Length: 291
Ligand code: FAD
Image 1 (cartoon, protein in one colour):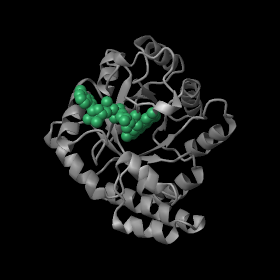
Image 2 (cartoon, protein in one colour):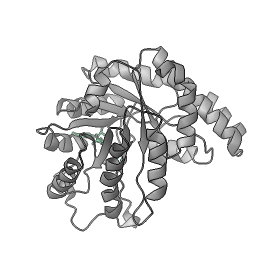
Image 3 (tube, helix red, strand yellow):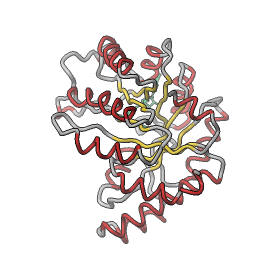
């Protein structure tokens, strides 16, 4: 099923993100997580696309497993280090697996030290995600893209970032999903700016339940996400105590989601980090709202 049709129903939507196993890692734990997540009846489950060649094949396999669990899948696809032929191969694999939804991404530049550029990479084929959207749009896939309420870290000014985003949407995107944010006002202000800029597609709010206080500073540094003082206090107080951090992280994410729904947002995407127990606790808290 196409995500644009799901979003058009106008009902509150909660979807999940999972990541596939890394190259040579077993599929079992990820399949178990997907099985449990699918049982919570999200509107769809997205599957990230890894940086290294071997792991990339796992995206299609896990996306296919998501659909076997009866849940529509959204396969992420990055283009920066891929040739046109490589992208064509990936897309035909997705099609063969019955995947109807693709999140069109540029990806990050491989770290020099990692030596991660595949031998067949011709990075000039796709400089930005918009180039991937243009390559895929003639098809009937439902296409999504990423957006950044606190500005993409490489872009000097949010105005320029939104102008680039408009170009990407106009190339044929059906919806957007935001980078995580911890202050809903950031999302509301950003959405207003997108609408003013003429971007009218649904903008799924990306919510990251933080249950590991130790990782959050690194994640925020890399993504350019600001940790508001109220959440900073939670991490400072409970970050070293996993049980308390789990309670606090679930409560904070739940509160964010309820506030978003209360203020007219229709679709929330939860970065589950393959942790069904965390997503499950949030879904229990939302039982009445989603029923
Ligand atoms: P783009 O839309 O190309 O934007 C990247 C930068 O280029 C921005 O600064 C933008 O302003 C600028 N830009 C865009 N167009 C132009 C132009 N025409 N001229 C000049 N500048 C321009 N990474 C993964 O590796 N795998 C994943 O599965 C994955 N999933 C993600 C899911 C979501 C919801 C999000 C928010 C991010 C995800 N990422 C993933 C990370 C993403 O790949 C990085 O954030 C990457 O740096 C940018 O990707 P993009 O598709 O937003 O790029």
